Image (cartoon, rainbow, N blue to C red):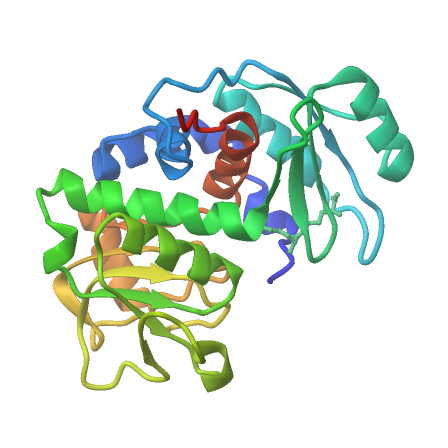
Length: 271
Ligand code: 2YJ
């Protein structure tokens, strides 16, 4: 997983209203609603107004300037009563545990959320996968498209791609899974590819950490691309065209974070 840098996230909080407006145009849903759909809740069903702490973590390469504040800002935007703890690491976790119901923290490899009352936890890779898959499915639906008729590519067979593939399959889509490493494709219940040569896809979930994986050669003219990967794995020419049509769903932290929150708050009543 790519470690975020300050320039990936420094405008995130200021642009939350624009993100919602863009999401509404492309998917018909706000950030909070996409997160709800990702975890199986109805729009408006989750009460996000929950005291939540974000703990800065100094281990590994250390604090990313503004990271914890950005996570708190994203959460506040969807209605969470979020704050950054005064202290970091174990002291910060202790402080957060005493003063909040949910907690968020990230080191260089893992970004997790926990609900201290229910003990439900969520990891960013999984949450990002289902969040971006939910956005892709909603965007296709908004255009009146039927998932069963689409050529759907999930690029990247890591935790994000595999969670997305499962979500799309559950919604009735037939997924083709791409990875350059054939060992990652072993025993996967999807059509698998190590290259897209000669193929075109109409719905794409781009979850690799490479550049230019998705381009005009492997996509149809009506393609919608949902891209949690950092850096963006869509080549510049295609990305430009998609942006003008509002069919590129890309953000570095927002949807993954919102989906983690929805995930730790929501438990489907199975009875
Ligand atoms: O607390 C801090 O400021 C740092 N320890 C944050 C570290 C951020 N971690 C990452 O960038 C990881 N690669 C996980 C990010 C997942 C985003 N999809």
